Structures are given as C-alpha cells and as structure tokens.
Image (cartoon, rainbow, N blue to C red; front, side, top):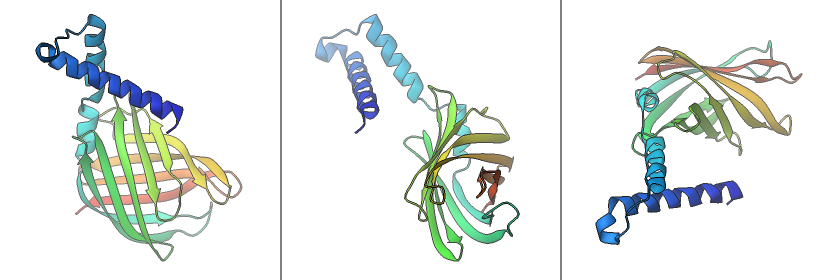
Length: 202
C-alpha cells in the first residue's frame, strides 16, 4: 500500500473506532468527547448518499450501445454495437458499469465505477477494459440535476508511451437515453473526439 492509502485506512479505522465507542457508551464505559463526536459526524455525513448518488442510481439497468470511434482526426468512423449493465453497489454509494461488445473486430469487455465524492464535491469515474492494462480516472464538478457533465483526467496511451489528458462528456436526453463522448490527443497532439456512444435503455 502507498503511504496515502495507509493514511486513509488509518483515518477510516479511527473513525470506525470512534463511532463504535460513541454508539456503545454503556458497554465500553467510554463517553465520546466533543472532538470525537464532531469527527464521527463528519465521517457519517461524508459516507451518506445524497441527491448526486440518487441521480446516478437512475442509470441502473440494462442498455444497448451504438459505438462510434475514430483513430485520428479526419479518419473514417468505426461503428459497432455493445451492451451495458449498470448496478448500484455499496449501499447506493457507487454505480458499477459492465460493457460487452466488439471493438476493431475483436471481443471487448470493460467496466467502470462512477460516484460522487461528498468531501471534494466532485463526480468521478474510473475505467478498465480488455484492450489495455491501465486505468482511466476522471473527475469534475457537476450539479446533481445537470444535463451535461464533463469530467477530465488521464489515461495511459500505448502510442505515446505515457499518460495523456482526456475529457469525457455525458449528455442526458432523458431517463432512457444519453450520450457519452471522449476527447483526447491525436497522433499530432491535437485534441479530437475519439469516441461517441449512444446509450438506449433496454
């Protein structure tokens, strides 16, 4: 584990310990201090799903995907179809997506986690798939009822041999239709639309 993960784990264990002692003062003989109570309340608030999580939960279900991708600016589009299933996990705190289809005439599988961080007030997403061994991570600020949400981050790029900046935009048409677009650098470094996916609920 990295030092940051160890620190985060230590904080969570401390919060859990404080919460447990606060909930069982008679059994343990410990009465939480004002500082411990305040800390516990902060952790509880940060861990409680809110309207942003409820909005993400509406995507739960099975979807059909129309996928259009471009290898470079001006290149002919490549089209394919896929299916996806969204599920809420960990008590509605996160949304898990699993995609199956074809990409460049090859079987394709991918999965991602989306969520809203109550601490940073940011929406975030992570993605891994069968065409890479690296993870894409994006973050951004979007209102719970926003029709358009743009997140920015980085993804390992085999051609560049390093991480490159990317952005993704989700546009909600209604509860049963939305589009996903991803932009990133082309062979010459100029940003272009690499991917567009039209989601339709099954």
